[in-house]
Image (tube, rainbow, N blue to C red):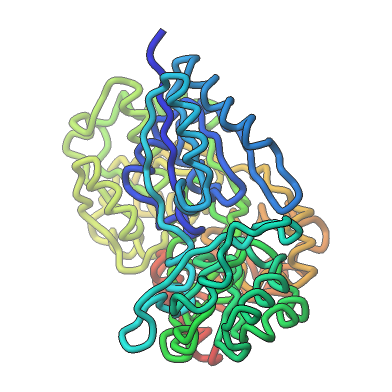
Length: 508
């Protein structure tokens, strides 16, 4: 049996993009991932499809598994010869109990490695615009557990020294103990009017910052309904937030966007919207699957040298076509002398990945644009292949046939309604928890409405609606939905830019 190993990995403070390159590498090769409640699902999505996922998350007074059992689990899995990743929020050695896990691994002669994570003690204040040190204001800081049981007969925290010994104090996991913490600080000399802040879900789009004072913090948290996970920071540096706040000042901060693209494609749009501060719910309205039969496509591939033109209408079409080509043990050389047309810059870019430079990329990213671009190049008797989705608009092949061409339209993939829970989305729309619904194709519109049920159009209209191009917008209008945004450029970047312009015009 091969030797197992355990990687004790820090996932960082919450924003999944703050994970280290090394940590991500280990997640991608792991046989087993043992993870906490603060580990983002998008990190787990980078793991192998056959990975074993074991949730051991802990919330206040609700532990899925005792720490001793977690320690033993790591040992047991490693003894099975597995590569084990113990994925923790923050850093394994900053109140992460990584030391306890490592000691048991040593006792059992299990090799291990520590992969540090960015601790919330410094990153969460940074995202709130609060530096833990600042020249002339704070030259020292301390990180303290806020989770210590206040009913213990004797505290391990030396309050008499801690309260005034350092400029900045950061308490992790201390929201529920705030009355005890603040009372001890004041009792031992920290002024009640010392600036303080409570930061919930720091570094994530849900981040909330409550600026207060040591004396008022406990009551303010109750009044504002602040719950874990949150940190408590004390010191004059809190006043710098007024000038240094940046994360929660972004244009879409506080907005929730529904991304309806297929799961394989959603990340690009999600990433763009998140960079503007939005919280994204990826709820695919469609899923891409192979056609029911490859017979038509295979026949076309076997006679590729007879076509004068190949027209690709989407990135999906390119990927599906070349995937099938490779499955049949062919490559781009079988395209022969055929000319290539691509609808859209992204489609053309995807073709470049296969070594193909499109001969025509129309300025208008839809079928009408390519018809105009091909005018004068199509001669009667030419043969054209269009590999595309099973269900698509017929205008392109119809117009080409009117020009005298023979056109083969073959399905390379089909779009189906995704397995998304429509009731959950409907409830969120009804509750006003979704501010923006994004549609990137006509199929995302029709399939989302199928998921939402008979009141789908009314529910969607409760939010702002953004569409890529007039075709998708037309599908919305057909179903009684009036778009608020229609991008002139039919790309993700074009759509995001149109969304930005809408919110800027409204003053957010």
